[in-house]
Amino acid sequence: MRNFLENFNFSNKNIFVIGGSGLIGSSVIKNFENLKGKVFNLDIKKSKNNNAKFIKFDCTKLNGIENLLTDIFKNHGNPDIVINCSYPYDKNWSKCSSKNIKINYLKKNTEYHLLSYTWISKIVAEKMKSKKIKGKIINMTSIYGFLGQDLQLYKNTNLKDNLAYSIIKGGIINLTRQLSSIYGKFGITVNCLSSGGVEGKVAGTKKKQSKIFKINYSKKTPLGRLAKPEEISSVIVFLSSGASNYISGANIIVDGGWSII
Ligand SMILES: NC(=O)c1ccc[n+]([C@@H]2O[C@H](COP(=O)([O-])OP(=O)(O)OC[C@H]3O[C@@H](n4cnc5c(N)ncnc54)[C@H](O)[C@@H]3O)[C@@H](O)[C@H]2O)c1
Image 1 (tube, rainbow, N blue to C red):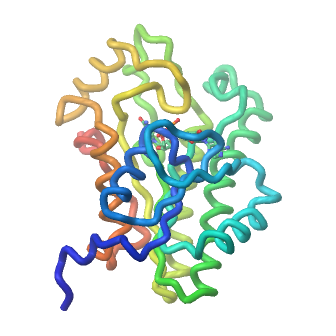
Image 2: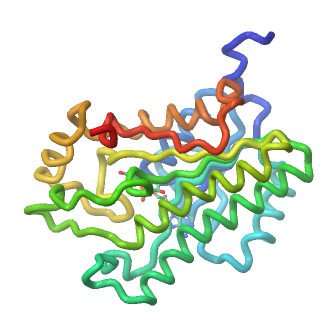
């Protein structure tokens, strides 16, 4: 049996982080840099927060994505670990409350987010299978992928419900199960992480979280606060490591206890 810590040796791993310039993605990349992984940041914009090799990548260009990923893997090596932390959305994302949403906003955002996560995961899983790589795929989802939004939290804030988000994130959770079922026999694991609210900004926007939202949110959470990005990224490292080899198809909830009450 190998030394337990060997599970966290990423020195011979090709790790692709989609959305690696974001709040959670940057923290994921920093962890892998510390662990000496060969890590690539696939994002629409470069990050000042990490030094990973940047590859310009727009996950919403679904028709060209297979060729693009094929080129990336040809040029930089086949994927051992792929983590999707992207948060793609279109210009009408803030109008996706039940009251204001139009069918086209729903279609576009579902395509950009749920379909891109789906299509990328499927392409990556096929690549791993064809190259006989016992790879790991991890997709970011949310407590709102398996729970309805608690509207009380938005009282006295300018935040609203988002109908599209719940569908997208719920879809990613079951995508995880389906892919895990199909690719398990090739030694490929597929998992997702349902994060609670992370301290920083309103996810998917540049806006800071309001004080009142943070107070409302913290009151509802057994740990009494929002998550720090590194508390999410450390679990992503675990799911990418040999220490989690027998976990597949799981939705790992990292929410400070939010969903248990
Ligand atoms: N932050 C939270 O509170 C929170 C909570 C639950 C779940 N999540 C999930 O975690 C993931 C990451 O969230 P975050 O807070 O780091 O978001 P973020 O907005 O900080 O980062 C998202 C990244 O995705 C990139 N991106 C956007 N459109 C893209 C595209 N078309 N192609 C490639 N990259 C693109 C952005 O440039 C950015 O770097 C998301 O899936 C989000 O739903 C976040």
